[in-house]
Image (cartoon, rainbow, N blue to C red; front, side):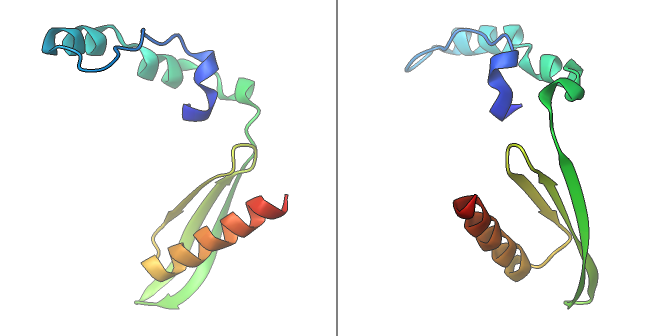
Length: 98
């Protein structure tokens, strides 16, 4: 929901150097997590895709790449750092071309 903050009702910004009491009140009154969890995903217009990539590195058999096409969010799991780095570079190149 970080990319869709406009659909949430957020508490007022605390400003610089809030007191401990202000921080506690903020945390108690912040309902943004519950709002995000209860927000209907179909209203966001997300286009989700997921792929399994076969690997022969470090004994791992496949990496999982999840993409949300609208926000360009990418999550990579079950993969060595080298593969994640290459995919991140690919994503950066893809974003620049579109």
